[in-house]
Length: 121
Image: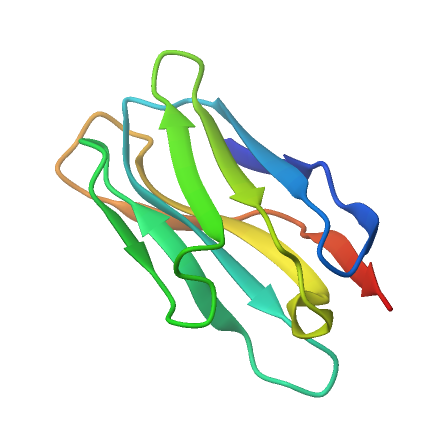
């Protein structure tokens, strides 16, 4: 009953910028911490950045200073502004969220389908 849909991925040159979006929809009573994860070819999925409902952010060291995570709580949108992109940023980027989808105390974790980001030389 909850969907996370990423958009904004694509091809960008080294040093360029890209902005990803994640739209949350469905039966949502509360949206808690949301985040971006990525999986590069031949590598495990890793955390990129997270943001709490109150706006507290956390970044992986590899993207600190280059990426900015933000959210629009009213619109239930999550963003990832990516600047100074590097070849190693090439990956499928996934949106993740903790959601109260039942009006209870329970949190459930959801994943989006992913969006491809390719950084070219």
